[in-house]
Amino acid sequence: MYCVQCEQSNKDGCSVKVGSCGKTETVANKQDVLLRVMLGVSVYAHRAAAKGAHDAEVDAFVPHAWFTTLTNVNFDRSRFTQLIHRAVEIRDKARGLAERAGADLFGLPEAATWDPGSTPHELAEAAPMASVHRFMDRDGPSITGLRNLILYGLKGTAAYSEHARVLGKDETQINAEFHRISAFLATDPTDLDALVAESLAVGALNLKVMELLDAANTERFGHPEITNVRMTPKAGKCILVSGHDLGDLKAILHQTEGKGIDVYTHGEMMPANAYPGFKKYEHLVGNYGGAWQDQHKEFDEFPGAIVMTSNCLINPEVKGYADRIFTAGPVGWHGIPHIENDNFSAVIECALAQPGFATDAPEETIPAGFARNTVLGVADTLLDMIDKGDVKNLFLIGGCDGARPGRNYFHDLAVATPKDSLVLTLGCGKFRFNREDMGDINGIPRVLDVGQCNDAYSAVQIAVAMADALDCGVNDLPLHYAISWFEQKATAVLLSMLHLGIRKIHLGPTLPQFLTPDVLNVLIETFDIRPTGDPQEDLAGMLEAAA
Image (cartoon, rainbow, N blue to C red; front, side, top):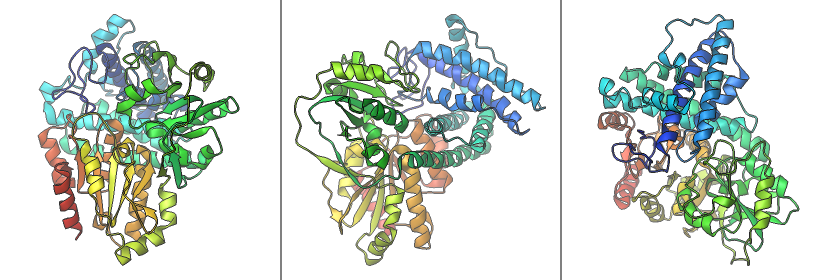
């Protein structure tokens, strides 16, 4: 195997039998094969779309299949065999669609006709042809790195698209653009300028997808409201829901009503507590635990059933809770029960069989719900505070958390920010500092939790609205960015920010290993991306630039 898609990968990529995330060589190889076939699907879908032809089944399968290949999502080798077989069928369907539409099918790239085989031996033999590293010697590390930037950006975009799709939001134009970029990638392009341009096209696409997901969440569950979220447990039977999928949380809450089971969010699911559509469920009692990398300790100590709805699963067999954890949607682990058709009855039975929390812990809460609707609802107050000098700077500090040393940077930066500044945060990176008492300004908490990582759309809308109100560009605002990078969703969000022309982003604690120094220099020179360094020195530079 060879994998460099996340921060957990080794310096020269995970090229061992088991990756740093726990992914086996067999699973990694099958993911590569699946993606190569999926590029072929998009070749045909793109050519069909040029003739005005689309297929809902093809468009629905694509984001789900891509999503399964993200870091810490699916480790189930049998599921990937099934997905590859289904992908070949979907590719055939897409070809038929293109043929019936009268599309030009000359000059097809290899991914459109490639036969990976069907047996385990054949799939293993096919894997080297699908590896992201296969043309490294021919094309060099910079071209390979840029192709990976597009590939991993598309993975993140696909994940957000799938989150929207399962909530009933899907757009033909978004699907068509995803196919177009994927079809471009299927040609194994080598033009550096074209690769940079398509990377930014991924960012533009992801912005539209995040807007679609925002609409899916808010139309279904209402706009988040300022909410004090309980962070300590209550006595009783319990279910812990981790991940990002609000639809799964809704189904679990509905199916557990009246059964004497408390439901807790975990990790990226915590912002759900601020949505009106979830507040009506009295047995949604708060959040338990923090970011994904601590789940071995937190899940081991949680006395109930656990559901993983999206990315960030870690090997559940290590700490012995494999008998009470379940997967849903794109998530999978070999031998762990997988929920189908939103039927969580097995989870409920498991929760009732577990001891639950024996006593109430002392209540601790933190504020959440500062998404775009909330913040823009008090925009006049905020702008007045800026005009009077009560608020001199704003910081966006958030993104993915992780276990690698250096992530205390984001805690240290946040707590060091001046008392006359506000800190917007999102993603699981917030757990580095969201329990710190950083005070308030005129009654407004200094730490404003915007939501999940996909709620970067909310943060962008806040920044754009403020720039418009102050009659300046986004880069002219006293707004500073410190983004913690970890995996492919963060790659997609970063590309969206670059597409918008946002500059001076402090990115860390390490930079993506799939980008070479030459490519990084292009991004640094073009967008003034700044690797994170000493938090006090970085903060001083930010404040000096805003003075």
